[in-house]
Length: 416
Image 1 (cartoon, helix red, strand yellow):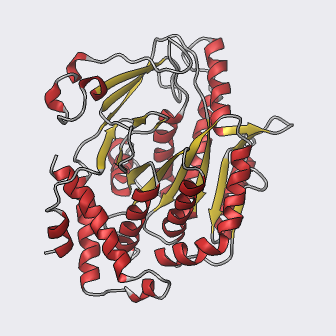
Image 2 (cartoon, helix red, strand yellow; image 1 turned 135 degrees about the horizontal axis):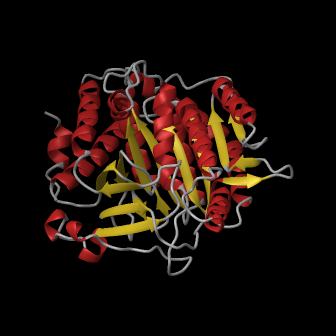
């Protein structure tokens, strides 16, 4: 039995929010997110989660858009980031938006302002910064974007080196982070300065390896220090349960606990869940990471696109559905007015005539989170591979702090 678990679960505190988005998107005051994902939200008021539905169909519009800078970290972050931008631009260029020409043009302009800037020849440039400690994936990503002929990345929006992190969170966080902090933050600052109306950061990373997880946690911490008033949302890939990285559970708990302190929200995608979507819903026989990334990109794109209000450009239209008003569905401290909302938009996504996405904040994430913490604790109790972290400055006390933080998240939701 884990001593940390016994200690923390005796605390009767509700400081953390753990949620799950299984068939919808997460909606917080300044950003909309995506379906089939799980989320951990640090305790940062006044963000309130309930149950919300977004419908696409039959409402007049005023489009709302603020620019988002995407930070792609590591191999996973850069590959998914490319697919997301490709999906966003493909959708915005669609002529079958199922709305009027005027509305479609406004939608396209709003999408470009949010995710792209344009240079003189009219080619959209992604509002993104690409970071990796090896050049191969970044070079491939830049090339694929340029070859599309539809959009590209900025010429000076990339940072890469020739030495990776060896799937070691400590090396990414304690070595690459401080060594390249100034260069990376300067590139991000220049990208932010290009935005007329800046909303926040969308940070794409994995949590099983070394660069995306370790360096990603370091960069997010710096963004919190330098852009404390801007929203920071980390989209994180939850590793396969039978992953190939033997220390992935260590890397995962260190990533989650550090981001819990510095990020506004952690959007978690489980590789196993996306794999099932590819196999059972899409009938793909030989599933590749490219297939998985395209599913992720479609989900993200479908909810990152602009939405609007019929009342004004600063408010969303909200219409509750009676079936979801039952107070028994929600925790007692959540006000009924905040428990359920409907946001409508007429413009279709990716040529779908109708679509609806649902997000619910629940205890669903408790089991997989507790499982990954348990696996890491079993390794830690036997001192397995600890020396790989201590030699780069991550001590046993740092692991214990991470266990305590995540056990408290589990305990808080179990006590609801």
